[in-house]
Length: 366
Image 1: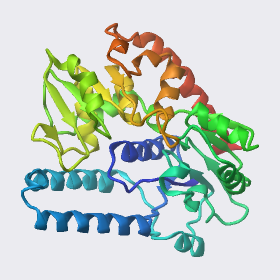
Image 2: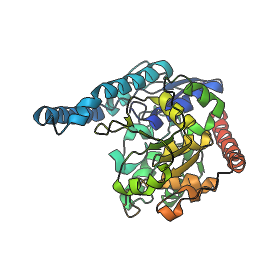
Image 3: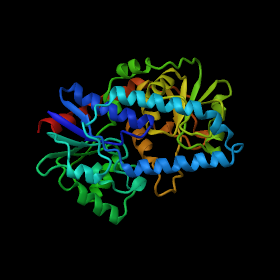
């Protein structure tokens, strides 16, 4: 079977790249020809170019204020090269690039099965409803399915509910990554929604470990932080954990101190988590790979709980499913030192993995 799936494959983010690769790898291993629909989102690229232009202009006007960015520049270039290397080596893309949704509709790639997913492609607060992620370009009569897209937020307003109903009415198979996402779609009147695990969890630990060996990073005896948004609150919360442990900070930011690791791509991300003694993170995929590699970890909120656009449910739902809610840290008194019982966790993951593979097999053979 020839399968095409669409996701946010072009963003230079560890989780974005690895979830895309994981779904491609899994479907290919099941014996199918698989391609990532190369939807480039021209409007996103324009925003990125404009943002870069503004930053460079600010650096030229105020070089001293931006000294850290200037000093970090070689590492930022190396990071881009590491992501590009992974992209070229691992992604099987459609033969045609699609810069806009109109270009997809005018000349869509032809597959036996079209899949939407994974990651936050259905989160209406990030970029609104991006219709290609709902397979609006698919020729009439072709099968539409979803594998583990994330809505990412805890509540939908009435207008958002109506939009979901309109965009998903002709899907044959619908799934969501989070239990809260399943409930949100049920509240829209969309039934028969299956909860499945993130694609990265479909891939065996041993395979991810083999990829981590492709990294040149070789550091020993450290605790790792990986925060998508840094705050003084988080620093105060985790500082006691590093009193007797060397700390490494993995970051995607440009304005960061000299101790931070900037020159890292997907291979380096895997290696840094695998070799860490413990991890502190507010990243969903930071949590996922901490669990896959059976590490001690602490998950912190990325957003305030009162924020209507908070994406915390992505992590809290997953932790609750595994019985790891005590790893969600909001206060120092919540920090526990009891080791995680990974025998129990792996038993639960095996059940979730089996359920997700059953969904995939139904999707492929119906």
